[in-house]
Length: 434
Image (cartoon, rainbow, N blue to C red):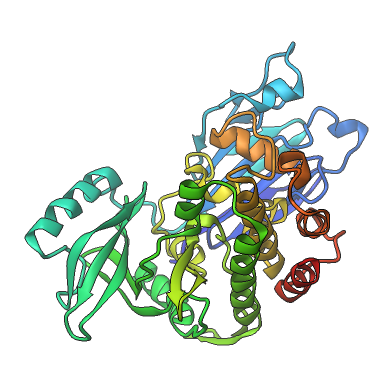
């Protein structure tokens, strides 16, 4: 049976069944736009605007209170709230625990009662932690053979590592070229269904062919490890460049952003074929950030190439990533729009445009984020995304030209109020500003 999580509200406000068959998040509260938006009435005033969050990766699901005044209850047990004397702002700073949900659990928020139905196998066996697997990979590099990597790719050295995987420099012994290998290391044992999901999603990514997109060369699943082989960009990333040089001048940063936007325009409008799903129009990256913008020397000029195109969705959909919004690293979320955060499953091209603007902002200011965060703890980042708007860029860096600042600020408008909605529109506006 395919895994599915259903949140069912049988009576009262927001009555209905909300079914999830792939990775998603949903917020419950009186704020319009939430997936579980509760009508704002006298009966529901004891529900906060953003009361709690569900993090779902079928068949797994969890819930976390968001510092509500009256609390969230699971099977009658209070799992979180702020104290009566605390303000909503103080409640937003609380790092409240995450509660795993199981089939048959009953969640109560004010007058709303929600039943959890979990279908499918919850018996995925936990394997070694990601840290332990990364240590194994480092030892295997010295031996010249890395488990899960086809032998045609001879590992040379570690390029980077994170909480869920590693990036290796390897030599393709068949083609005689250097390449970058990204290996995602699962923290749970996955089966044939999850592997099929990943391979289905990544097949569309491998078809992308654009000078500003890192070219995929090979991919697969071996010994329980996903691998993705890509072209190697020897000049590092935009993140590395800003770390070395500090704030970039517009004549350096804007051309790199234009490269990224050209890549996005191509991908958003490309018709791609996905096995067993037919032809679909466009791919959304979902994870544009400085670390995913790689740099290459092309005919003596520095050019940007967008890496990991759509890979976040492939990992999430297959259940490999092991990430949750409650314990993930900050790298992705500080560059995420409210639109994407509130509608994670239905990410549209505009979320990539917003993230590109946030990345350009970061490069021009030398590392400032578009929002003021109380801290870089996940709970504080999530609260800021939901409840605060971007700070105008000239408040961070007054030297940014006024017309360029105006364009960036407009691209960062949340919701559907701004006129800049596509990569082509943002690119045209940046070119005009220059």
